[in-house]
Amino acid sequence: MGGGAARRHIGGAERRARLALRHRLAPQARAAGPEEVAEALVALHGTDPATVFLAVGARLAEPGRTVAQTERALYEDRTLVRMHGMRHTVFVFPTRLTAVVHASTGIAVAARERAALVKDMAKAGAPDAAWLAEVEASALAALARRGEATAAELAGDEPRLRTQFVYAAGKSYEGLHTVSTRLLKVLGVEGKVVRGRPLGSWTSSQFRWAPAPPHPELDVAAAQAELLRHWLTACGPATEADLKWWTGWRVTEVRRALGAIGAREVALDEGTGYVVAGDEEAPDGPDGPWAALLPALDPTAMGWQQRDWYLAPEMRPALFDRSGNVGPTVWWDGRVVGGWAQRPDGEIVWRILDRTGAGREAEAAIGAEAERLRAWVGPTRVTPRFRTPLERELAG
Image (cartoon, rainbow, N blue to C red; front, side):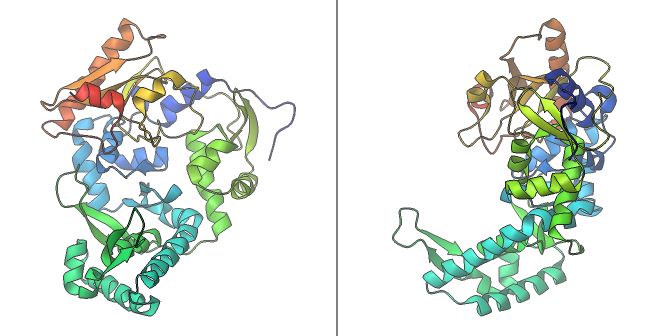
Protein backbone atom coordinates (compact mmCIF):
# COMPACT_ATOMS: atom_id res chain seq x y z
CA MET A 1 0.00 0.00 0.00
CA GLY A 2 1.17 3.49 -0.79
CA GLY A 3 1.78 5.87 2.10
CA GLY A 4 4.56 7.47 4.03
CA ALA A 5 5.29 10.91 5.40
CA ALA A 6 3.92 12.71 2.34
CA ARG A 7 0.43 11.28 2.61
CA ARG A 8 -2.29 13.85 2.01
CA HIS A 9 -4.74 14.97 4.71
CA ILE A 10 -8.44 14.72 3.83
CA GLY A 11 -10.64 16.65 6.23
CA GLY A 12 -14.32 16.33 7.04
CA ALA A 13 -15.39 19.03 4.58
CA GLU A 14 -13.82 17.19 1.65
CA ARG A 15 -15.27 13.88 2.79
CA ARG A 16 -18.73 15.45 2.87
CA ALA A 17 -18.22 16.88 -0.62
CA ARG A 18 -17.26 13.44 -1.91
CA LEU A 19 -20.31 11.91 -0.27
CA ALA A 20 -22.66 14.46 -1.86
CA LEU A 21 -21.77 13.43 -5.40
CA ARG A 22 -20.78 9.80 -5.08
CA HIS A 23 -23.86 8.88 -3.07
CA ARG A 24 -26.12 10.70 -5.52
CA LEU A 25 -27.46 13.13 -2.92
CA ALA A 26 -26.65 16.57 -4.34
CA PRO A 27 -29.27 17.63 -6.93
CA GLN A 28 -26.82 17.60 -9.85
CA ALA A 29 -25.78 14.01 -9.00
CA ARG A 30 -29.22 12.41 -8.80
CA ALA A 31 -29.73 9.17 -10.69
CA ALA A 32 -32.00 8.13 -13.52
CA GLY A 33 -32.86 4.70 -12.09
CA PRO A 34 -32.41 2.32 -9.15
CA GLU A 35 -29.56 0.47 -10.83
CA GLU A 36 -27.49 3.67 -10.84
CA VAL A 37 -28.22 4.16 -7.13
CA ALA A 38 -27.20 0.62 -6.25
CA GLU A 39 -24.03 0.86 -8.34
CA ALA A 40 -23.12 4.12 -6.61
CA LEU A 41 -23.66 2.74 -3.10
CA VAL A 42 -22.61 -0.91 -3.77
CA ALA A 43 -25.30 -2.21 -1.40
CA LEU A 44 -28.70 -1.04 -0.16
CA HIS A 45 -29.79 -2.30 3.25
CA GLY A 46 -32.62 -4.77 2.68
CA THR A 47 -33.53 -5.93 6.19
CA ASP A 48 -36.45 -3.48 6.09
CA PRO A 49 -37.96 -3.72 2.57
CA ALA A 50 -39.11 -0.09 2.63
CA THR A 51 -35.52 1.11 3.11
CA VAL A 52 -34.59 0.00 -0.41
CA PHE A 53 -37.32 2.06 -2.04
CA LEU A 54 -36.88 5.09 0.20
CA ALA A 55 -33.12 5.09 -0.33
CA VAL A 56 -33.62 4.93 -4.09
CA GLY A 57 -36.33 7.60 -4.09
CA ALA A 58 -34.14 10.05 -2.19
CA ARG A 59 -31.57 9.85 -4.99
CA LEU A 60 -33.67 9.81 -8.16
CA ALA A 61 -34.07 12.84 -10.37
CA GLU A 62 -37.70 11.79 -10.88
CA PRO A 63 -38.78 10.13 -7.61
CA GLY A 64 -42.35 9.62 -8.79
CA ARG A 65 -41.10 6.56 -10.67
CA THR A 66 -39.36 5.03 -7.64
CA VAL A 67 -41.72 2.13 -6.91
CA ALA A 68 -42.31 1.07 -10.51
CA GLN A 69 -38.64 1.28 -11.48
CA THR A 70 -37.36 -0.50 -8.37
CA GLU A 71 -39.92 -3.31 -8.63
CA ARG A 72 -38.99 -3.73 -12.28
CA ALA A 73 -35.30 -3.97 -11.41
CA LEU A 74 -35.88 -6.43 -8.57
CA TYR A 75 -38.60 -8.71 -9.91
CA GLU A 76 -38.70 -8.41 -13.71
CA ASP A 77 -35.31 -7.46 -15.13
CA ARG A 78 -33.46 -8.93 -12.12
CA THR A 79 -30.78 -6.26 -12.43
CA LEU A 80 -30.93 -5.97 -8.64
CA VAL A 81 -30.96 -8.91 -6.21
CA ARG A 82 -31.97 -9.02 -2.55
CA MET A 83 -29.70 -11.50 -0.74
CA HIS A 84 -27.55 -12.06 2.33
CA GLY A 85 -24.26 -10.21 2.34
CA MET A 86 -21.87 -8.56 4.73
CA ARG A 87 -22.27 -9.18 8.45
CA HIS A 88 -24.95 -11.80 7.75
CA THR A 89 -27.32 -8.98 6.77
CA VAL A 90 -29.79 -8.80 3.88
CA PHE A 91 -28.89 -6.24 1.20
CA VAL A 92 -29.88 -5.38 -2.36
CA PHE A 93 -26.93 -5.61 -4.76
CA PRO A 94 -26.41 -5.07 -8.47
CA THR A 95 -26.78 -8.54 -9.97
CA ARG A 96 -23.28 -8.45 -11.42
CA LEU A 97 -21.88 -8.33 -7.86
CA THR A 98 -23.72 -11.41 -6.55
CA ALA A 99 -20.80 -13.76 -7.23
CA VAL A 100 -18.38 -11.30 -5.60
CA VAL A 101 -20.55 -10.92 -2.52
CA HIS A 102 -21.15 -14.65 -2.19
CA ALA A 103 -17.47 -15.56 -2.42
CA SER A 104 -16.17 -12.67 -0.32
CA THR A 105 -18.64 -12.86 2.57
CA GLY A 106 -21.20 -15.61 2.12
CA ILE A 107 -19.22 -18.84 1.95
CA ALA A 108 -17.76 -18.70 5.46
CA VAL A 109 -21.07 -17.64 7.03
CA ALA A 110 -22.96 -20.30 5.10
CA ALA A 111 -20.74 -23.07 6.42
CA ARG A 112 -21.39 -21.94 9.99
CA GLU A 113 -25.14 -21.64 9.41
CA ARG A 114 -25.48 -25.14 7.93
CA ALA A 115 -23.36 -26.69 10.68
CA ALA A 116 -25.49 -24.94 13.30
CA LEU A 117 -28.72 -26.21 11.75
CA VAL A 118 -27.49 -29.82 11.61
CA LYS A 119 -26.21 -29.56 15.20
CA ASP A 120 -29.47 -28.07 16.50
CA MET A 121 -31.53 -30.75 14.78
CA ALA A 122 -29.30 -33.51 16.18
CA LYS A 123 -29.64 -32.16 19.73
CA ALA A 124 -33.41 -32.21 19.34
CA GLY A 125 -33.46 -35.76 17.99
CA ALA A 126 -34.61 -34.54 14.57
CA PRO A 127 -33.56 -36.22 11.31
CA ASP A 128 -29.90 -36.12 10.26
CA ALA A 129 -27.88 -34.30 7.61
CA ALA A 130 -28.60 -36.91 4.93
CA TRP A 131 -32.34 -36.43 5.43
CA LEU A 132 -31.86 -32.67 5.31
CA ALA A 133 -29.98 -32.98 2.00
CA GLU A 134 -32.91 -34.93 0.50
CA VAL A 135 -35.40 -32.31 1.65
CA GLU A 136 -33.18 -29.54 0.31
CA ALA A 137 -32.91 -31.12 -3.14
CA SER A 138 -36.65 -31.66 -3.28
CA ALA A 139 -37.41 -28.09 -2.17
CA LEU A 140 -35.00 -26.57 -4.71
CA ALA A 141 -36.53 -28.66 -7.49
CA ALA A 142 -40.00 -27.47 -6.49
CA LEU A 143 -38.81 -23.86 -6.45
CA ALA A 144 -37.27 -24.26 -9.90
CA ARG A 145 -40.60 -25.55 -11.23
CA ARG A 146 -42.57 -22.71 -9.69
CA GLY A 147 -40.12 -19.88 -10.36
CA GLU A 148 -41.18 -18.14 -7.13
CA ALA A 149 -42.89 -19.52 -4.05
CA THR A 150 -43.63 -18.82 -0.41
CA ALA A 151 -42.31 -21.13 2.29
CA ALA A 152 -45.86 -22.44 2.73
CA GLU A 153 -46.18 -23.22 -0.98
CA LEU A 154 -42.89 -25.09 -0.95
CA ALA A 155 -44.01 -27.04 2.09
CA GLY A 156 -47.08 -28.09 0.11
CA ASP A 157 -44.76 -29.56 -2.52
CA GLU A 158 -42.32 -30.99 0.05
CA PRO A 159 -44.22 -31.75 3.31
CA ARG A 160 -41.01 -32.62 5.19
CA LEU A 161 -40.28 -28.88 5.28
CA ARG A 162 -43.01 -28.65 7.96
CA THR A 163 -40.98 -30.82 10.36
CA GLN A 164 -40.48 -29.08 13.69
CA PHE A 165 -37.82 -29.45 16.36
CA VAL A 166 -37.15 -27.88 19.73
CA TYR A 167 -34.30 -25.39 19.82
CA ALA A 168 -32.29 -24.83 23.03
CA ALA A 169 -34.42 -27.16 25.13
CA GLY A 170 -34.47 -26.16 28.79
CA LYS A 171 -33.04 -22.70 28.12
CA SER A 172 -34.82 -19.41 28.76
CA TYR A 173 -34.85 -18.86 24.99
CA GLU A 174 -36.20 -22.32 24.11
CA GLY A 175 -38.29 -22.30 20.94
CA LEU A 176 -39.95 -24.48 18.35
CA HIS A 177 -38.24 -24.20 14.96
CA THR A 178 -39.55 -25.34 11.59
CA VAL A 179 -37.17 -26.89 9.08
CA SER A 180 -38.46 -24.65 6.29
CA THR A 181 -37.58 -21.44 8.13
CA ARG A 182 -34.07 -22.50 9.05
CA LEU A 183 -33.26 -24.31 5.80
CA LEU A 184 -34.39 -21.48 3.52
CA LYS A 185 -32.25 -19.09 5.54
CA VAL A 186 -29.23 -21.38 5.07
CA LEU A 187 -29.94 -21.70 1.34
CA GLY A 188 -30.12 -17.92 1.12
CA VAL A 189 -26.72 -17.47 2.73
CA GLU A 190 -25.32 -20.21 0.50
CA GLY A 191 -26.43 -18.26 -2.56
CA LYS A 192 -28.91 -20.89 -3.76
CA VAL A 193 -32.09 -18.87 -3.24
CA VAL A 194 -32.91 -15.17 -3.01
CA ARG A 195 -35.86 -13.14 -1.78
CA GLY A 196 -38.40 -12.46 -4.51
CA ARG A 197 -41.56 -10.40 -4.86
CA PRO A 198 -43.33 -9.54 -1.57
CA LEU A 199 -46.83 -10.80 -0.83
CA GLY A 200 -48.11 -7.28 -0.26
CA SER A 201 -46.96 -3.80 -1.20
CA TRP A 202 -43.38 -2.57 -1.45
CA THR A 203 -43.32 -2.09 2.33
CA SER A 204 -44.23 -5.73 3.08
CA SER A 205 -41.76 -7.97 4.92
CA GLN A 206 -43.52 -11.16 3.75
CA PHE A 207 -41.96 -12.39 0.55
CA ARG A 208 -41.60 -15.23 -1.90
CA TRP A 209 -38.39 -17.15 -2.54
CA ALA A 210 -36.79 -17.49 -5.97
CA PRO A 211 -33.82 -19.43 -7.38
CA ALA A 212 -30.63 -17.40 -7.14
CA PRO A 213 -29.26 -16.10 -10.44
CA PRO A 214 -26.45 -18.33 -11.71
CA HIS A 215 -23.00 -17.05 -10.98
CA PRO A 216 -19.43 -18.36 -11.20
CA GLU A 217 -17.54 -19.55 -8.15
CA LEU A 218 -14.79 -17.03 -7.47
CA ASP A 219 -11.58 -17.17 -5.47
CA VAL A 220 -12.32 -15.81 -1.99
CA ALA A 221 -9.31 -13.48 -1.75
CA ALA A 222 -9.89 -12.10 -5.25
CA ALA A 223 -13.58 -11.54 -4.48
CA GLN A 224 -12.74 -9.74 -1.25
CA ALA A 225 -10.36 -7.45 -3.09
CA GLU A 226 -13.01 -6.70 -5.71
CA LEU A 227 -15.73 -5.94 -3.16
CA LEU A 228 -13.45 -3.70 -1.15
CA ARG A 229 -12.40 -1.86 -4.32
CA HIS A 230 -16.04 -1.15 -5.18
CA TRP A 231 -16.86 0.04 -1.68
CA LEU A 232 -13.76 2.17 -1.24
CA THR A 233 -14.46 3.84 -4.59
CA ALA A 234 -17.92 4.77 -3.31
CA CYS A 235 -17.09 5.52 0.32
CA GLY A 236 -13.39 6.30 0.52
CA PRO A 237 -11.56 7.55 2.36
CA ALA A 238 -12.23 5.13 5.19
CA THR A 239 -10.29 3.74 8.12
CA GLU A 240 -9.33 0.13 8.67
CA ALA A 241 -11.95 0.04 11.44
CA ASP A 242 -14.61 1.25 8.98
CA LEU A 243 -13.62 -1.43 6.48
CA LYS A 244 -13.60 -4.22 9.05
CA TRP A 245 -16.99 -3.14 10.38
CA TRP A 246 -18.67 -2.80 6.97
CA THR A 247 -17.38 -6.09 5.56
CA GLY A 248 -17.52 -8.16 8.73
CA TRP A 249 -14.13 -9.66 7.80
CA ARG A 250 -11.13 -10.33 9.99
CA VAL A 251 -8.55 -7.57 10.07
CA THR A 252 -6.08 -9.82 8.25
CA GLU A 253 -8.55 -10.18 5.36
CA VAL A 254 -9.10 -6.41 5.22
CA ARG A 255 -5.35 -5.76 5.09
CA ARG A 256 -4.83 -8.41 2.43
CA ALA A 257 -7.56 -6.89 0.26
CA LEU A 258 -6.17 -3.36 0.73
CA GLY A 259 -2.79 -4.60 -0.45
CA ALA A 260 -4.29 -6.47 -3.40
CA ILE A 261 -5.97 -3.36 -4.80
CA GLY A 262 -2.98 -1.09 -4.14
CA ALA A 263 -4.96 1.17 -1.80
CA ARG A 264 -3.32 4.47 -0.92
CA GLU A 265 -2.92 5.79 2.60
CA VAL A 266 -4.23 9.26 3.47
CA ALA A 267 -4.43 11.13 6.75
CA LEU A 268 -7.87 11.58 8.33
CA ASP A 269 -8.87 13.35 11.53
CA GLU A 270 -9.39 9.86 13.01
CA GLY A 271 -5.99 8.60 11.88
CA THR A 272 -4.90 6.64 8.82
CA GLY A 273 -7.43 6.23 6.05
CA TYR A 274 -7.44 4.56 2.63
CA VAL A 275 -8.58 5.43 -0.88
CA VAL A 276 -8.27 3.57 -4.16
CA ALA A 277 -5.25 4.41 -6.29
CA GLY A 278 -5.78 7.65 -8.18
CA ASP A 279 -8.34 9.00 -5.71
CA GLU A 280 -5.96 10.86 -3.43
CA GLU A 281 -6.65 14.35 -4.75
CA ALA A 282 -9.65 16.54 -4.00
CA PRO A 283 -12.50 16.01 -6.49
CA ASP A 284 -14.98 18.67 -7.57
CA GLY A 285 -17.65 19.33 -4.97
CA PRO A 286 -21.40 19.92 -5.26
CA ASP A 287 -22.74 23.13 -6.78
CA GLY A 288 -24.01 24.31 -3.40
CA PRO A 289 -25.51 23.16 -0.10
CA TRP A 290 -28.07 20.40 -0.37
CA ALA A 291 -30.75 18.72 1.74
CA ALA A 292 -31.90 15.12 1.93
CA LEU A 293 -34.31 12.98 3.94
CA LEU A 294 -32.81 9.50 4.16
CA PRO A 295 -34.63 6.45 5.53
CA ALA A 296 -33.84 4.24 8.49
CA LEU A 297 -30.82 2.01 7.73
CA ASP A 298 -29.85 4.12 4.73
CA PRO A 299 -26.43 2.98 3.43
CA THR A 300 -24.99 6.48 3.65
CA ALA A 301 -25.96 7.00 7.28
CA MET A 302 -24.75 3.45 8.10
CA GLY A 303 -21.73 3.50 5.80
CA TRP A 304 -18.94 4.04 8.32
CA GLN A 305 -18.28 2.88 11.86
CA GLN A 306 -16.63 6.21 12.72
CA ARG A 307 -19.25 8.88 11.98
CA ASP A 308 -18.24 12.07 13.80
CA TRP A 309 -17.36 13.80 10.52
CA TYR A 310 -21.02 13.78 9.48
CA LEU A 311 -23.01 13.09 12.65
CA ALA A 312 -22.50 14.81 16.02
CA PRO A 313 -22.18 12.22 18.83
CA GLU A 314 -24.75 13.99 21.01
CA MET A 315 -27.50 13.22 18.46
CA ARG A 316 -27.01 9.46 18.50
CA PRO A 317 -29.37 8.66 21.40
CA ALA A 318 -32.26 10.27 19.50
CA LEU A 319 -31.44 8.84 16.07
CA PHE A 320 -30.29 5.27 16.81
CA ASP A 321 -31.93 2.33 18.56
CA ARG A 322 -30.16 0.29 21.22
CA SER A 323 -28.74 -2.12 18.65
CA GLY A 324 -27.06 0.63 16.63
CA ASN A 325 -29.64 0.85 13.83
CA VAL A 326 -30.08 4.39 12.52
CA GLY A 327 -33.55 5.82 12.07
CA PRO A 328 -34.74 8.31 9.43
CA THR A 329 -32.28 11.21 9.17
CA VAL A 330 -32.37 14.78 7.91
CA TRP A 331 -29.21 15.97 6.11
CA TRP A 332 -27.96 19.44 5.33
CA ASP A 333 -24.84 19.93 3.24
CA GLY A 334 -23.26 16.60 4.16
CA ARG A 335 -24.16 16.47 7.85
CA VAL A 336 -26.96 14.78 9.74
CA VAL A 337 -28.82 17.64 11.41
CA GLY A 338 -32.01 15.91 12.58
CA GLY A 339 -34.63 13.28 11.92
CA TRP A 340 -38.02 12.79 10.29
CA ALA A 341 -41.07 10.55 10.45
CA GLN A 342 -44.36 9.92 8.71
CA ARG A 343 -47.55 10.43 10.71
CA PRO A 344 -50.64 8.22 10.32
CA ASP A 345 -52.29 10.84 8.08
CA GLY A 346 -49.30 10.72 5.71
CA GLU A 347 -47.70 14.02 6.73
CA ILE A 348 -43.89 14.04 6.68
CA VAL A 349 -42.65 15.80 9.82
CA TRP A 350 -39.06 16.64 10.68
CA ARG A 351 -36.96 18.30 13.35
CA ILE A 352 -33.53 19.90 13.28
CA LEU A 353 -31.43 18.87 16.29
CA ASP A 354 -28.16 20.48 15.24
CA ARG A 355 -28.56 24.12 14.21
CA THR A 356 -24.89 24.57 13.33
CA GLY A 357 -25.00 26.08 9.86
CA ALA A 358 -28.66 25.12 9.43
CA GLY A 359 -30.59 28.38 9.12
CA ARG A 360 -33.46 29.54 6.95
CA GLU A 361 -31.92 28.24 3.73
CA ALA A 362 -31.63 24.79 5.28
CA GLU A 363 -35.19 24.84 6.58
CA ALA A 364 -36.55 25.79 3.17
CA ALA A 365 -34.55 23.08 1.41
CA ILE A 366 -35.48 20.42 3.98
CA GLY A 367 -39.13 21.40 3.69
CA ALA A 368 -38.93 20.99 -0.07
CA GLU A 369 -37.41 17.52 0.32
CA ALA A 370 -40.18 16.55 2.76
CA GLU A 371 -42.79 17.58 0.20
CA ARG A 372 -40.89 15.72 -2.52
CA LEU A 373 -40.97 12.57 -0.39
CA ARG A 374 -44.65 12.95 0.52
CA ALA A 375 -45.58 13.37 -3.14
CA TRP A 376 -44.11 10.08 -4.35
CA VAL A 377 -44.92 7.96 -1.28
CA GLY A 378 -48.55 9.04 -1.62
CA PRO A 379 -51.07 7.02 0.43
CA THR A 380 -48.51 4.42 1.52
CA ARG A 381 -47.68 4.44 5.22
CA VAL A 382 -44.12 3.57 6.21
CA THR A 383 -43.07 2.58 9.73
CA PRO A 384 -39.40 1.66 10.17
CA ARG A 385 -38.77 -1.89 11.30
CA PHE A 386 -36.30 -0.64 13.92
CA ARG A 387 -37.85 2.37 15.60
CA THR A 388 -35.80 5.11 17.23
CA PRO A 389 -36.71 7.65 19.95
CA LEU A 390 -37.06 10.71 17.69
CA GLU A 391 -38.96 8.82 14.99
CA ARG A 392 -41.47 7.53 17.56
CA GLU A 393 -41.94 11.00 19.00
CA LEU A 394 -42.44 12.69 15.63
CA ALA A 395 -44.77 9.98 14.34
CA GLY A 396 -47.09 10.55 17.28
